[in-house]
Image (cartoon, rainbow over all chains, first blue to last red; front, side, top):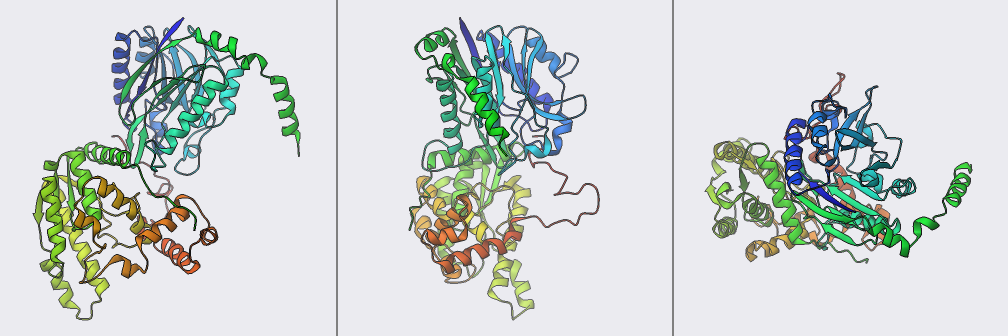
Amino acid sequence: MKLHLALAQINTKLGDVQANLDKHLSLIDEAKKQKTDLLVFPELSLTGYVLQDLVSFVAHRPTDDDPVFKPLLAASHDLDLVVGFVDEDSRHRFYIASAYLSGGKVLHVHHKVYLPTYGLFDEGRFFAWGDSVRAFDTRFGRMGMLICEDFWHASPPYLLWLDGADILLFSSASPGRGLGDNEKLESARWVERINMAYASMFTCFVAHANRVGYEDGLHFWGGTTVFDPNGEELVHGPYNEEALTYAELDLNQLRRTRARLPLLRDERTGLVRSELDRILSRD
Amino acid sequence: MIDIDLTINTDLAREILTGFIQSEITRVGFSRAVVGLSGGIDSALSCVLAAQALGPENVLAVRMPYKASSRDSLDHAQLLIDQLGVQSKTIEITDMVEPLIHLDPEMSKVRKGNLMARARMIVLYDQSEAFKGLVVGTSNKTEILLGYSTMFGDSASALNPIGDLYKTQVRQLSRALNVPAPIVDKPPSADLWAGQTDETELGFTYEEVDRLLYLLIDQRYMPQEAVEAGFDEKFVDLVVSRVRRFQFKRMLPPIAKISNRTIGYDFLYLRDWGT
């Protein structure tokens, strides 16, 4: 089985949801013409990233009576979508969120579980912390979504793997930093290294959509990637410019790789649990 | 002494910085830039980046000599103007600052220098309105950290593409972008009085201080660790205290909070809000 994936590394207008929605819809049209099965947008693709006091103004609920999600859900009859947005729950907590839309329905919403609040980041000041990491079933198999800092930690991808995800969809709004004499930024090299490592260690597909553009002095570097279950890079989008990057995922590769390399079969989850229990019960 | 390498990939630096200028100017409805061209390397680099980002016809380079300014400064600025094909203007500031200097025969060199730097700011912001272009800053990371600037003078700008580059990195990028050799090679000077050079005034070279600042700021070394890495203790103390003492120059003035929501504390939006 083949999955025709597209990753949209876009620039956004900070706080202008309507303008960003229009851009989503036009890229959806473009991807549709290329017979795309699944189109993934970056973190906070509908709102922009450094929202600060804009958070409550740009929040939406992923329902079919929401003016932003209504057209997106309608579009999801033609191809599956992952969009980034600010989710407001019924008690008015705001989350950095990704929604997986398919066949006019919301299949899954992930709330970012790691909010970087250090260095140049201040997410914990403005957002609520998500508290679950769950895989979910799609028409292409079981998947998992994580947002930026979520996969800087090893445990969320590991949990998704154990929960049955064979395709990991990562989205970011990653500010570029660390310019040395290398042709890539330190932050880009770091992210590419760990994504390749997850694909290799979990013998799964890892797709990453990162935004581009600037917000004040911050620069987002793009560089979308897809790695296959052997840890090989299937595609690599350009740096620093908007692009739709297409990848054909041969889902049979999961079987071939795992027949050779049964890391999933041999993973000793009971051992992990007993050691975690011991570690967590220590004074 | 430990090995400290400040080398940057100049292609990537150029790409990010021209993208920054392009984005931050066009998103607010402008397409043009104004740069005060002193004849020195920092403003030369900002001017090259602006010309590459916006096209030379959309950049106005302004030379603003004072009667005591060196002839070299003017000539070097002209070299770059000719090389880039940017638009240019020369506006003398002597008539602006002289009346104030005459009011106080005791006026120190530093005060005169500050007057000149602020007169140039006035000219640039006036040209900004006339040319419909934003003022592109020319302060590098070294001088911002050391507070080696005049507040509301040379530090004033609408956006600054080179403020995260140390002076030695400014030199590296300038060479890569073909800034004329006389500009890259001459001793850095604010040219506020005859014979002034940055390195004499500061008491150390940019080469030395950039390596130390890189450890203290970028690599988060404690001062004592920098000493252990091979830097002279007095030099470390001097630089650490300068960085702290001039924090005020890097900030907007604090507003006294009395309401529930105060600009700067809990009224928080990026400048790029809505764009």
